[in-house]
Structures are given as structure tokens and as C-alpha cells.
Image 1: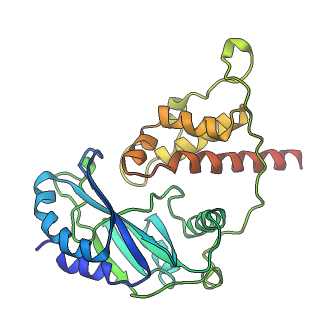
Image 2 (image 1 turned 90 degrees about the vertical axis):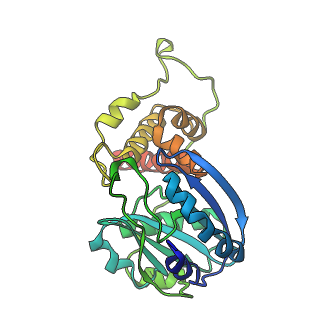
Length: 289
């Protein structure tokens, strides 16, 4: 049956995953089902039975792993030439479409949520991965149903796996794939009322202009909407909007942010706004220097 051996191989990695969120997404990116907090035994029992229906409906089967002992960091949108740099620390490498890959790294010894978030940012930047990866992935052995691929939908494949590999932050840094740490930016949170252009104060950037000026997407035709979101957020912060205001507004104007919410990646807008604010602050300090 489709995906049975791939499912077995990808779930046997033994890196401390205690439960999984299981989501069904149709070809348009709309959520069609959700099963939270599934145990490994439940996944092994239910997934093979779901494959035929998912194929018939062209639904993507997506899992998000969770652990009480390790942090899982997804390195998404990696090209083939980037794989040798992460192979020594990844416990799983997937090919999601021709030329596009994901690497998964389990990290022990990380502390607070902020420490984990910063370490993940540095690892994604150093590896050349998508800075806004969702932390969820299609199941190996199933098709990657996206309109841009039809009618020849690629099959998600396991390129490499190392069961039980859990890396420490020190080991990852010694491999030379961790971007340098950056000083935390102090961004003031403004709480005064929202104003309009007629007030002579803050206005929102033109989102469509940011999309038009974005570089081409690595996934297919069209602009890189992640970069457009990032640049729009940076402009908004520079105009005086707070991080929370920018994150909320991004959910209104960005199709990609809305898609991430449907994929249960509710933190995408907040993380993008925070990273953009940090970049804006670094640029401000360089300008003063």
C-alpha cells in the first residue's frame, strides 16, 4: 500500500517524538481534517488506511511532530547543493519535489522558548533554509498535491535517515552551519492610536508593491511571498507600527500568512514581524554608526 514502507522508515527515527498533529490539506491548501495529539501507535495504525482516500481526493497528509525531550527544527526549501552541509546533523532528509528538500534536526539541551527560537533562526539562516518553515511536513510516500505540479504530482521521498540522531547545540555549531548570533534588538512597542495618512503620521506600506518587488520564488513561478511579507513588515516597523500591530495586519493583507494559519502555523505572522523588526533595528544602528 502507498507509503507503508516510507511511513515505517520515517517514524522509526526514534528522536524523542511523543505525539503528532495530523492534518489533511487539499490541493488548494484548505484544511480538510485535523487529528491532534496522535501517538506513534495511532499513526502507524491509521495512516495506511487513510492513504487511498487521500489519493482519491488529492489531499496532502501532513504531520507535525512534538517532543518533551528534544526540539525539532525543520530546514525547508533546501537545494541539492545544500544537503552535504546538514547531512551530519539531520536525522531525516526528504525530497518534497524535484530539486527541493527538507532536513529535520533534533536538538537537545535548548532552554527557553526564546533560546530555541533564536537557535532555530540561526540554523535556518546558516543552512540556507526558508526562515519561516512551518514545522510540519508531508508524509514520505505520499504525493505532493499542489496545482503547480499537476498532472504529474511528485512523491515525497526519504533521501537519508539516521535513527536516533539527536544533536547538541555545540555539535551543530562545530559543523559550521550555524549563523553568528546577533544582538537582540530592542523595539519599542507603541500603543498610541492608529492614524491615517491625513493625520500626517503612520501609514501602512503598499503590500502589492512589496509583492511586485520580491525576488522570484524558488518553488515555482511568481514572487517569493515570504520575502515580500518580510520586507513589508520591515517597512511597517520603520513607520512606527508595533510588532503586534504589524503581525495582525500581515494576517489581513498576506495570502501566505493566511495559508500558514490554515496549516496551523499560527506563529508565522508574529515570527515574521519580529524578525523584520530586528532587521530594521540592526539597519538603524548601522546607519548611526
